[in-house]
Image (cartoon, rainbow, N blue to C red; front, side, top):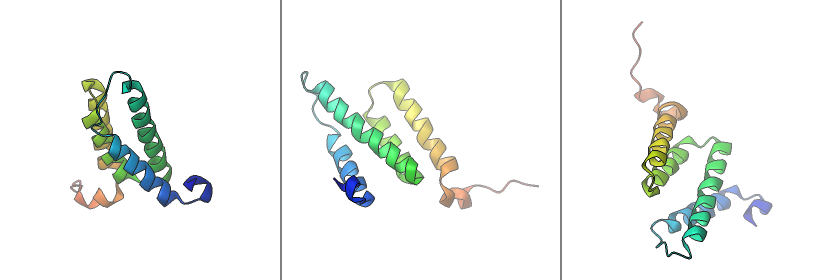
Length: 103
């Protein structure tokens, strides 16, 4: 509905709240795949939204948060690497923190 109305800030708030609420939900055997699917949808939609808006800081935070949720260590490590990469290269406000290269 919010997307149809063009209120992307509302879309963002709804997705962020939904993603946050899926954290730590008990994974009952019958509900596990459904809960995981809903969580994945929030994650994918937020990823798309942040990338489209080039909103790198929230995207890096999302990846780090998702890494904490993953049980697969390889998948978690990949998300941490992506989050670190975004923080290193995608955030314009971090440029001042980089040491100047000598020349």
